[in-house]
Picture 1: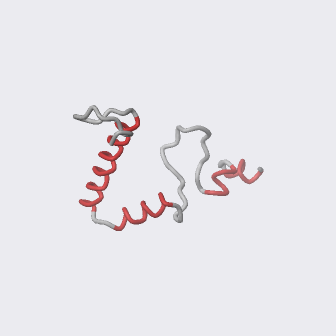
Picture 2 (picture 1 turned 120 degrees about the vertical axis):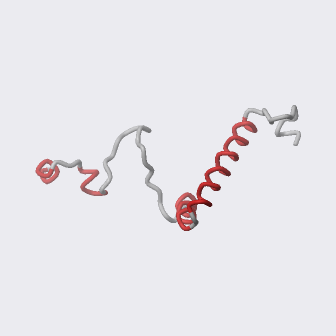
Picture 3 (picture 1 turned 90 degrees about the vertical axis):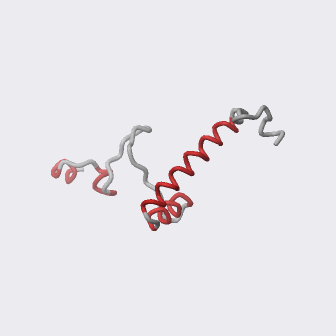
Length: 84
């Protein structure tokens, strides 16, 4: 597009304000506010920074639990997720 060349931007940037990069090497996400993730971020931004840190801690802990359940490796237990 002529206008893109004239101002030195990509068509993606001209239309959205965000430079498009193919693949997973982006360092940002574009998320609809109406999605579950959008709601989560909206609520997260409403709480005090000290609580935001706690939320991050909870999410990291839950992520660790999920990884362990996926591979059937409970900390301190030989019981698999199916048997619990």
